[in-house]
Figure 1 (cartoon, rainbow, N blue to C red):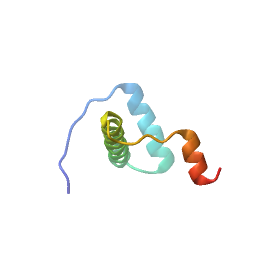
Figure 2 (cartoon, rainbow, N blue to C red):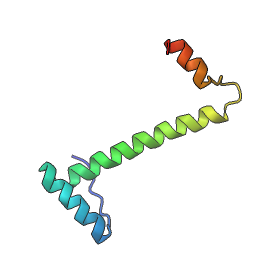
Figure 3 (cartoon, rainbow, N blue to C red):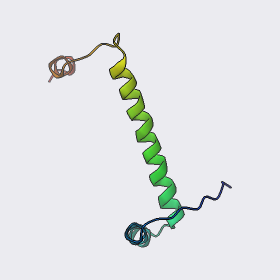
Figure 4 (cartoon, helix red, strand yellow):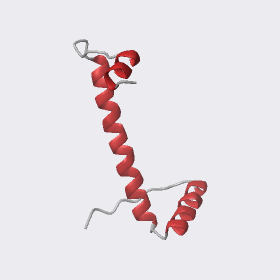
Length: 72
């Protein structure tokens, strides 16, 4: 079992959450957990991309080079 966390959400956001919960027959907690997991995964990917952009030694591949390597 995990740690309980309390949050305060705007009424409109709760209404949207409740609508999705009803449509998917899932509890609010499940939906909030999955949304937070997806956000944190995206954030980690963003950080990796930003680190690669800042790395002056990392090679860049143009769209043309990528297409050529894929045979497109």
